[in-house]
Length: 233
Image (cartoon, rainbow, N blue to C red; front, side, top):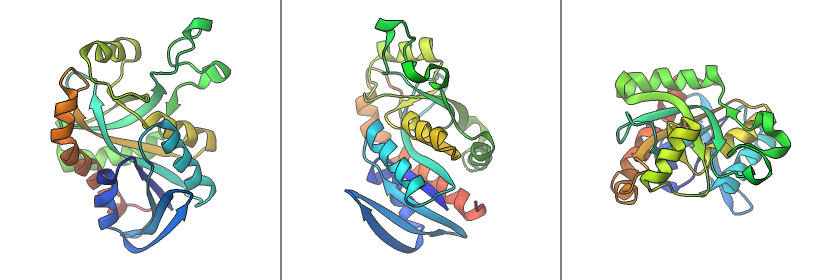
């Protein structure tokens, strides 16, 4: 069974529309939709925005629903300068850009009690399947693999963008990916993160986001649907 997460309704609506035999189960305040896309059994949920929300549902998918892998679908701000709106980034590894223990001798993003494991990795084989499908769907020049950094902040300034490039060599930034990968790594469950670029994290990111969010979200969700129609885990 595959667990699929999106932070907002627009990021999961296309996936839900393609599911058959859907039954919905509520755990706390979160609704989980069980069904199939093609031959793939899926549990889909809307986590809400932010690291805690996404970590909560990722753990629930593993320990309550017994999923064998997790996919996060949604949008992100582009950091890598060659990215264009609508492009796809498949995450290779993830960290928290807002985890700050520098005052006691740690690097930005480094977790003091687990400093050797402060970078969380996607499952390479699993993610490469999505990468191959994405290249066929959108074209090789529209699909990238790279680091995604997360924090409980909407990045919308050139100054912040420059820091993410310099310190983290990031391709994209969002508010959930690292926490999902963190949980998946702890639970030893494969994960893949798909992010479509809705803005470029710069001084006009807010306006760009509102104009392109819906279209970008559909690109990411369409990739999940395509995977489920051609694979099963």
